[in-house]
Image (cartoon, rainbow, N blue to C red):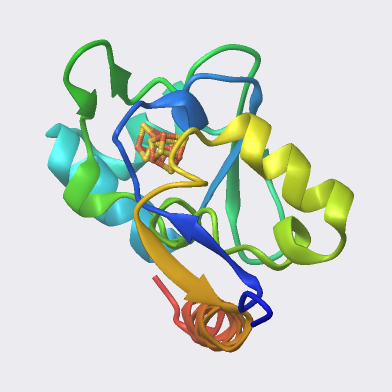
Length: 141
Ligand code: SF4
Ligand code: SF4
């Protein structure tokens, strides 16, 4: 019998996705929540962390680790982390080709173990996440 196509994944909280160069995007509302969680103002959050302002989101680019990641503790704004972080690794670009999937396997040690996600499950997740991103972007902070 042919094995059902899909992939295994569980977050093992290794922090690797938080500890590499890249961008984290916050909507105004997400930034407000993150600033509150850090006990600071939005103005100060922007001044300290935001590297660019795009149409609807604020970009925080880092050449090393996310500034909110604390070694051996994890994300210091976990409850207020942006949707981008909540939905990883179920991002469309991670499932567009075999190469993209292999790259994801290299980047996220949680892939290849844990819960099985069939192709239909993955499509459902991607569509749900996409809807949330659109809705999130439409909300005003
Ligand atoms: S790299 Fe994968 S397993 Fe590790 S914390 Fe990020 S999502 Fe979880
Ligand atoms: S906000 Fe939190 S979950 Fe997102 S990249 Fe930074 S440390 Fe990781």
